Image (cartoon, rainbow, N blue to C red; front, side, top):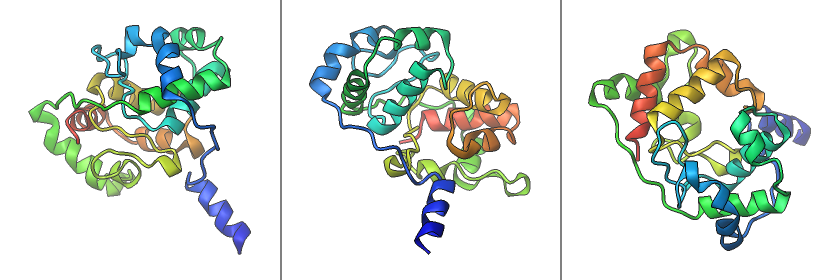
Length: 200
């Protein structure tokens, strides 16, 4: 019975890797290499680059570690994190997680479609509601390693969804994001991204 429960939890993405807790003070010093793109406190001013402020430390640790191992590929990020130790990564993640995220806002013309998909999915195409993993307010689920998405730049979110849809990004557990994003049309991806930008 316990084996079946454990297997089900893994399949649902409910078991996260145990990461060591980091030190946000040490992380602030080490994050000096990050602030040019991601902002002094993790709130990026450039929509090409994600805001990291308020993101779950476990999720950030996984993403930075994936860039380091090149399980997630981006020439700039792969190079930037290459020399970081496991402790450095945990500390940087703790620093950004300790800061407050700022909501960037949404374009009104996309709100209705984006809201409908985020809250209810698209049943006829088997698209799960974004809220089922990322929560109704976009706060995510740290226990399941589902990231917070509220207030994220629409341009970055759309790129992430398109990368999952094309398979250019493949570090999602059990291909969950690739499966969802791959069923969305371009205008739906953009609408969801715009809705998320104003979600809080």
